[in-house]
Image (cartoon, rainbow, N blue to C red; front, side):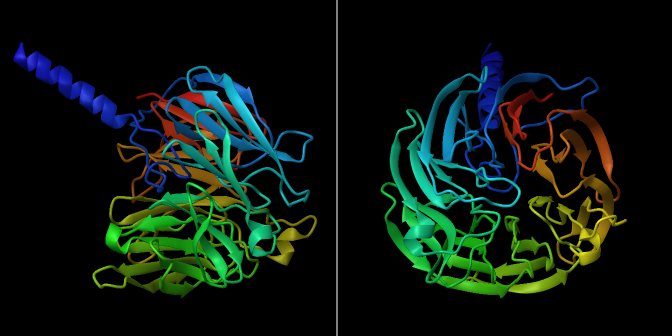
Length: 419
């Protein structure tokens, strides 16, 4: 009897440990990893519900039985945050706010993904408006128009930095003179610190290091930057300048390695030294062919990195009748050396997103809406299952409690994952 009770408690605790929310861009650890295990499927995946949505490329976040999505309502110069019930997709509330009228390339909806912390949601709109909402009621706590406040220049594709929350601060790449990186008080939106002169990119930050030397790593218009979360002190900088100013991927941390990439520059691997009082980092290799567009790479194990690269921009490729159309390729490389182990061509035109499962597999969501389950074997590409789940999408999915949430250009879709 005691053994049965112990077994039941173990199973209960295990199931609770596995079930986790997806509270921000790239999930709870900001690295595209999920606590979910996914088994190969033979039948079409089950779509549990769909809801029509407004314009945008912002990814859904999942917290406390709700899915949140940031969009631009059709025909209105507004942005909206909507809460949905995870069980049936029923909209629970929608809150909107007016924004400046501006037209951007490739769409006018939000691109940055909201972040959840302590009962509040933080959104960053395409025109640079940072807003704090109550996650239960949707009521607005505070709002800052960062481009106006800091006189930051507009990006041609719009503000895209997904906020990250740490130590009571909302951290953003605003891109203004003297306020490239800004830390806002998460409770009232007041500026705690600001630093650097760099312009903004479309990239989002990550956190690395222990609390006493906690640093936030950004990819700004000038390169990789590691700054102290507590006061904005800059620990290190590594140049990485894109000729088209189109750096978009989130830096990726694996052990002491940090990888970053842009469209024209290619890929750069840095190595951090966090043993000193002031952390340092240095470049260890660059590869011009490792040019990621806006799909953030995912490390698997200690030695390998998987990422999606794009076609190198050229005048010939842009001319009518060009025989070199753009395409995206999935690659597997060695972290330490940059050596390519294999390449799977044409997983999309510009994009395909990657999510690492708890059992070490990869969910590959292709641009046209196919979801593939991949065995990340460093020797060869091995696909375990495939199925169509949505229309064309440039968003990354959210994975929580056995479900995958994705938005395409028309709908928010909830798909059941086989476990």
